[in-house]
Image (cartoon, rainbow, N blue to C red; front, top):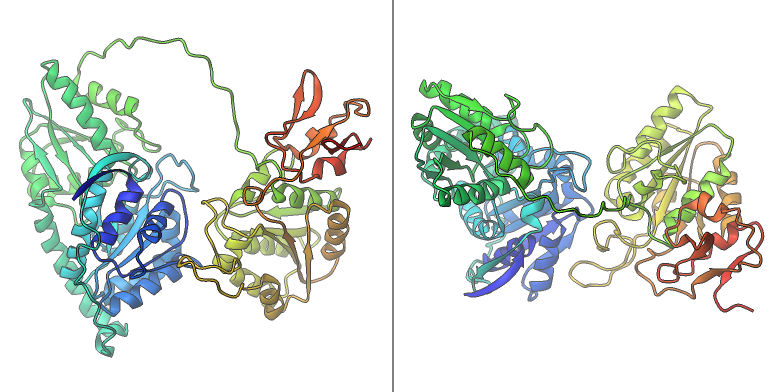
Length: 605
C-alpha cells in the first residue's frame, strides 16, 4: 500500500481499478464526473471505459457486461438516475453475475443540479442495496465491499457519495494496482430462464428479493460501517454521510470540554436499513436527533423500528422541524442543531469584520459562441410572439439579462417537447427549442422524431460547440473520439436530422451576425420542423485571437455593447467602455454591435 492525498471521486476511481473493474460506463454530470475520468487515466488498457450517450445506455452496457461475469461500474449524478431508472428497476428483478456498482452522486444544496432528490429513497423504492460514505476514505473502502456484496447476492448496488464527499480530499492508503488481477469474466452463458424478464420470473424473483433484503438488514446490523457509540446521557444522535463527519467534530470538542455526550449511531448502509442495530440504540435513549441529507429517510426508518419493536422514544429531525427539510447540513447548521438538542450553552464566536463579497452571478464565458447564437435568434424574432425553450448545459445561462433567452428549462431534451406543447395550445406562437450538441445525442433525438411524426411547427436550435462543456469537456458522439482514446467517425447532427425527416437544416457560424439573423428569420417562417445548427467551438478549447479594444475617439458611450450581450470582457473603466484584454478572445461579436464602429482588433491602424 501507499498513502495518497485524493479527492473523493479519485479515491472511488482508484478503488474500482484496484478491485478489478472490467467495464466502466457513465454520463458526465457534476459531482460524479471525475470518477470515470480517474479510471480512464489509471487504465492500463485492460479496462473498457466509455462516456455513454446517456445514463440509460450506460447502465444497459454495464448490465450486458455484468451478465458476462465482468465487474462493472456505472457513474452518474442524481438526476441521471431518472434516465437510468427504467433498466435499473427491471435489472434488480433479473439480477446480475459480475459485481455491479451504480454510483449516483447526490447534490445537496443543490449546488449544480435541478433537484435535491435523495438516492437513498430511490434505493428503497427500487429495492437496491445502498452504501452511503461519510468521507473519501470510507468511499474508497466501500467500493471493495460493494463489489463483494453485489456478487454475493447477484444484485446491483448503489454507492451514494454526496458533493462534499466527492470533492473533498483525504489521505488514503491505496491498495496495489489491480489487486484483484485474477478476476476474469467467463463470458455470457445463455440461459433464457435467467436473463429474459417475463412476469413469471419477476414474480418469483420479487419474493427472493424481499427475503434477501430482510437478510441484508440483519447483516448490515452487524456491519462495521454502521457504528454505535455509547454516550454519557440518555440522548442520542443518528447521522450519515458528511453530516456525521460534522457531528463527530462537534462531539470530540464537547468531550474535551467535559460536556455530557450523546450516544451516536452512524448509518452507512441506509437500505436495507439495519433494524436490529437501530433497536439496540433506541432502547438506550429517551430522545433522538436525526441529522441527515436530504430526505427524512433515517428518521422515518427509526419511527418504523420504534413501532416494530414497541420502543417509546421521541424522534426529532426534519419531520418535527428541528432540522431543515432542504439544503445542505453545513457545519454551522449542524453545530446549532447539536447544541440546541443537547441544551449546551452556545459559545460566543469572535466576529471578524470581513468585507462583503461582491455578487458574481454565473455568466457565459467571454467569447462563448452560445452568446452569439442567442443574440442572433433574439434579433431575428424581435417583436414577434415567441417562446424560447431551454435545456440543461452552459447555455442555460442564456436566461440571464441582458440576453433573457431561456423561457423554460426542465430537464435534458425537454425543450423539444415543451415547445411542441406550447405550439399546440397557441399555434400563432413561434416555438424554438435550444439544445447543445452533447445533449442532442443524449436525449433530444426522440423529441425531434416526435415533432416530425406529429407534424409540429417548431424550430430547433442546436448549439454545437464540439464538446460537453458544462461538465469538463468530455467527448461525445459528435467529437470523433472515444474515452478509450480511439478516433472514430463523427456522427453528424445534420445527417441525423435529415434522416429523421427534417428537410430544412442550416449550418451557421454564430459570429457572422448579420448572416445568422437572416437565416434564423428565413427558417422560422418555414412550416413544420426545421433546424439551425450553430457551429463554433467552445471558447475554452481554442487559442484566443487578437483581443479587441475600444477607440475612445469614436466611442459615443451609448453602451449598446454592454446592454445587448452582457459579455464579461466588455467593461466600464474610468467611466468609459473598455475591453478587458485578459478575458477577450477576439470573437468580434461586440464590434458587430457597435453603431459607430468604435470597436476593433487591438493594434489596428
